[in-house]
Image 1 (cartoon, helix red, strand yellow):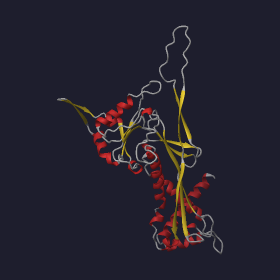
Image 2 (cartoon, helix red, strand yellow):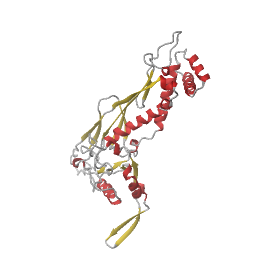
Image 3 (cartoon, one colour):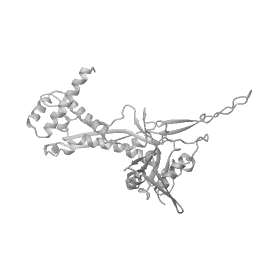
Image 4 (cartoon, one colour):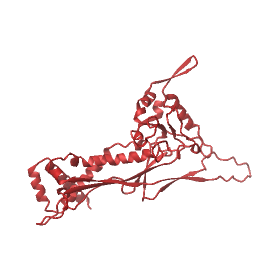
Length: 356
């Protein structure tokens, strides 16, 4: 389609949506125009495109919590996607004495998998609802579906931090073998410092230090005020016996706070209100991802459709779906969104139940 054709179609889409909005507001002249326009076959599709575009606009404007602690990825299909981490070859080189053969260095690899799944719902409206001017749900439907799609992404990403039942931390990820077994310390300046120190003193498989460029402190809303007190304080006071020292709060610039309201939604365990996490900032390019949130390639945005089963007028011409189904006068909307999430590299992560 040429640029001129695209611009013309976009203009007609906007005009169709504006016209139908006037109908919804009781404009009799607009209703007459709609009835006249419905003798053509393309108006229902233009109107459908207008609602889809409005939803995608709303979707893009809804903030997603997961983007602040998880890395985005795309997959070609619904099969599990493997992320391969090549291990070895990065540690300091071996000294080679004169006339001595170079030492062979071993390489290995770690594989992490995740997959996307299909989510969606169908939303039936009725012709009577429209006639009775009970239109708020219909008029706000695109924004509601946009919110639902964003919330689905946040829910599936937050779930990766907990077990399948949502009752405790994910001990397949947070475990001794990964050097990030869950702690029990309540959130405080001291426990956050200890968590950061714990991460910085870990070693990878080649005995190299774990270097993190920026960390994320993620907490549920129940710990938000405590976290803000820790990170926004201007000074840190330390007392050792009778001696008190005061220093500037270095945590302010080192750690970014993420308050995730979905943590207490997906976690129903006894520690739901006290769990807290330290994760690598996914927006720092040199950080290896701890979590990944995936989308189906070519289908990254939600897909909104209306069921076109209104039939045709006796005198000819298609009937808009918004006039109701031929069989029962319902107007059926359907939204589809494909997303998924998984855990990846555990080495720069920390989790605490906050139970102590």
